[in-house]
Length: 307
Image (cartoon, rainbow, N blue to C red; front, side, top):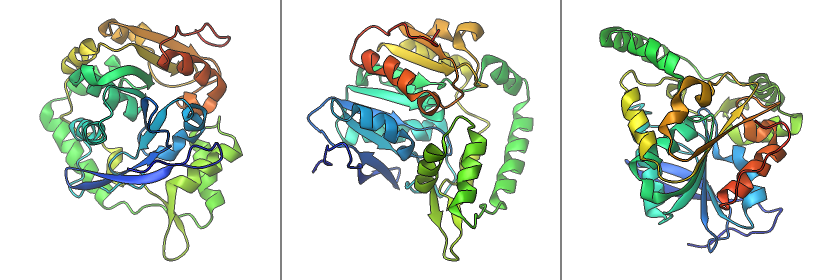
């Protein structure tokens, strides 16, 4: 397999792999002789949201960033199967087919949830792990869901699926309108960041309007996901050093306060001031100052604005 060029101004090469008959997309930033590094995006996002991180790491790492099923330029699941197990299988197939193990992984949000669970299933395949707000729902939220009888959860899921089936994707007349929507979702984004994320996250319809690439069905998590005790068992199986990153201005629950940190053997947990849910966008330099030494096997430095 040929490699993408490694000059600083060159973008990545698009590639395809298959999982459960789905045609899935990833980008390869070249440098195939370097240690492999996977960057796994979050929900309703895409692989090119990692471009700023990838450019900083491509000289020392073989950076690969997949589009999750139903996202970016990957195929949508015909059965709307966006379960945790399906995502984990896709990740396992990418690592298996490209012979990446042992691999270092950075995952954000949904991508962090997938990769922390994968690391518990295949601990020998993961060298180092970074999860940016990637442990899923808080214990409080999980308890509220578990308190509802399965028939109630299933009924709600059926109704929400039906609603999504009839929901037409929003169309924007101008790219600027979609960019503004991107900035509404994350007020920390600069106009340049928001436009980059938008350009790679939309496609143009035949009538000239623009629509987000992700499948509407990815909005809905199934009512029969892995039970929290099972997820905690997977966290306990992780043998690689882990760095859990949180934004102090985010809605996400801090695992040091809600008890989830206790299930990790070797986790370092940090919170970044001035950052929301997308720490890698909101405070790129601070994020890289934490992550670069960590994935190289060095101690996480004490930085201003990090606790």
